[in-house]
Amino acid sequence: MTRLVLVGAGHAHLYLLKRARAFVDAGAQVTVLAPEDFWYSGLATGMVGGRWAPDDDRVALEPLLAGSGATLIRDHAVAIEATRIQRANGPAIDFDFLSLDVGSVVAKLPGLDDGDPRNFAAKPIATLSALRKAIETSPRAARVLVVGGGPSAVELAANIAAHPNARVTLAASRLVPTLPPAAGAFLERRLAARGVTLRLQARVARIVDDAAWTDLGPIGFDLIVRATGLMPPPLLASLGLQLHHGALVVGADLAAPGDARIHAAGDCAAVAGARLPMIGVHAVRQAPVLYQNLRAKLHRNAPPRRYRAQRHALLILNLGDGSGLATWRDFWLAGRAMRWLKDRIDRAFLARYR
Image (cartoon, rainbow, N blue to C red; front, top):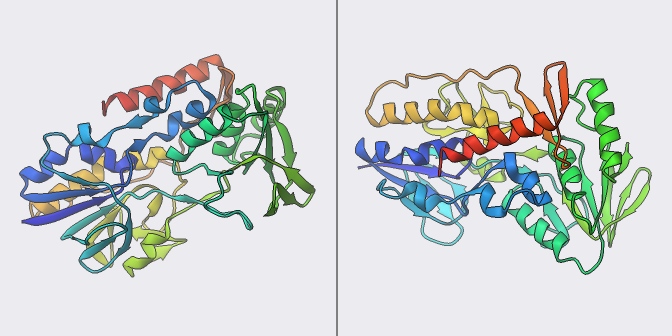
């Protein structure tokens, strides 16, 4: 029996997990290796701000796989060899075909230990549920420092500011540089109106005790949120295949040119040797291609689908006050209708898997 192993439960694999029965019916022994449920990035910042409950942002894997015949193992992959996946807490898993949707990790800050209870990363998203709890249970107004200037950092700062006992500072060299200039200026004004202290052109060089040292001096904090840029996880280096800035290089069929048994999608993949922006829309669009091509290989057919990335994507930022900022190429629009549109898109996506 052909052994198909799916590692990770990200945006692309969610589509496959819902259809896992088709792989089993094609004669595959399907194993899903994932340490936690699917957490959706689209609702994550709203969950931190209190608009959504943690369960609103999560899709449980057991119900999704119920009746499929697939086996779910709750564990981390720590290394991948020629035909075997080494696990953190159990025996290795052998495979004939492998699909990776293991997402990305957040860059570290010098002087800040992974185990520091004040340290929260923008990913994995489950961490943000713990951040919300830490803010809500703080015995005094918590000084929350968000480090980073991308969309996630901006949304986190704006939504954390919704908590009455949070005092938010955002430290970044600049805010969302891909925004049209007028939209960027609007965003700065809106964040300031939300009570967020902006420390722009402030690069955090190191953490010492309860202060982040920047080019402009120290910033004190009680809790620190790292939204300092994303990178593929180090697990991929164990494959011994071609990487591009840490991501596994795959062709338009989402299989590795050096080993066609191995596939990847989402943040951990460099499609045709190029890393796409690490946003969920690319993984969502890659999912049907990955699904069809894996099915074709199980049936010993040539992969029928090729992924072509869209050049532009709609971005809607949740500003934490009931409004949103939407951008498309050089166009932008802000207001409550934009947040309504974002909520509608996000809730519709999650509804497919519940």
